[in-house]
Length: 141
Ligand code: UDP
Image: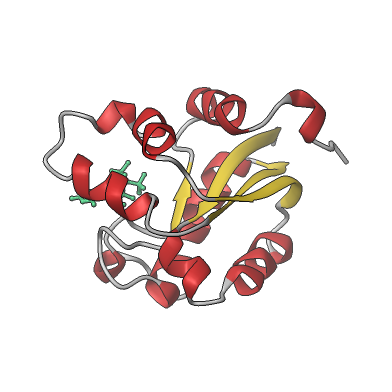
């Protein structure tokens, strides 16, 4: 096992539902430590930049509109196999297909309002962490 870092974003739908604490409990109960966090209202440019990989996809404009519809809670998670562990806790992109007991199964309504984002590889995790956090904002522990 290797200690990894990954990005988690609690999306506007889940922030509005006041389930930040419940989602943090799942991280903490499964070996993922929060080592940096910020609540932020994303600008359109920030959301477009973050999801640039999807810019040719038909859902891109709706995704950017959704991600800027209210504040998001962004955190760096650290732990053994953090990238895969966070993806496991999140569940499938479409909450209708997400395994029982996952964050998306329990808190998400639809494929576009799906409660959380998580980096899908170690390489993307490093890019996404640097997108939102300076090194000085991260507290390894
Ligand atoms: N998305 C969407 N419609 C789709 C596919 C994806 O609105 O048909 C949104 C959804 O919010 C998803 C995000 O685009 O979380 C990124 O898609 P990806 O396939 O990378 O899924 P994820 O890694 O978030 O599970």
